[in-house]
Image (tube, rainbow, N blue to C red; front, side, top):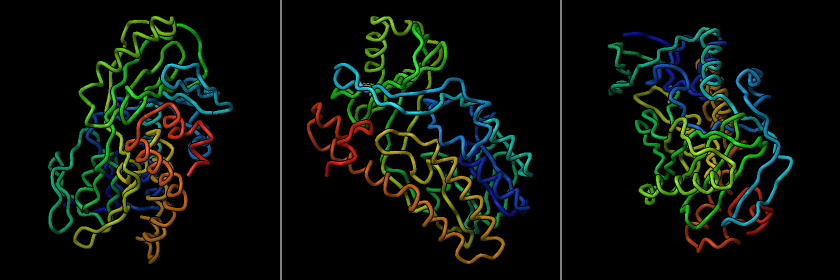
Length: 350
């Protein structure tokens, strides 16, 4: 049995930041991830708002292109341009690797290619490498289908399924392009430029997951015919995004406190699916709260819950309301605009 202070499930942005924050305060931290290396395979559109740079000073090392604007196409109409809309396109694998290395440098022990096999009735955790771990606190930062979340009854039940390809970009572009249409049920399409290539993807409600391949192929053909992208597919990826809004982010297993962060806590935006910034911030807060709790601050875990709600609650509830309203209405162009963050109606209409 390996006795530690904090066990972190997941080494994406949320997990690495949690591990770093707790380790920097001198606690024994073990963080595990089923991936063989940080950030690979990439399951992300790779856009982050500029504000992430305030949280992660090393952002520039993994940024590949600056983004200045957003262009939104509703049912194929001329794009509506939102500017400024500052952000960066990342090399997500490099970004995750940098965060993991920083956590390790802070003193956290990292284990990749390691799966959580079981969580016992006493709160101890069995890993795929044969280790049994007894932790004083667990941080679940292991994505939308979190093992830690399931163990404490916090499950993301509303997901969007996505498929993405990387394609050659024929003309330089500094905007994120969004495609809204009744033909993309419960989601949207995107073209995010990244230097000489672009990430082209689609997300839909699970009931329409069988249409993903055809919807993405149709969007790809359209943009190729317009001369914007090449026909070649350089890589493929996909995954699930939680869109049901925030979960109660704390629980307990046989007296062992559990905190959830990032997608595991349902912090991805229910409309845009954006989750990197929330993962970075919530992971830092979770690691800090874990450390303070272990150091004797009685309110640390409750404070974490309240801080998440103060930072993310209002925007996530608005987005969830917009998403649900669209799902239960006819997706007319007006309804699509009302449901998207680039339009004033999203922020002002009831």
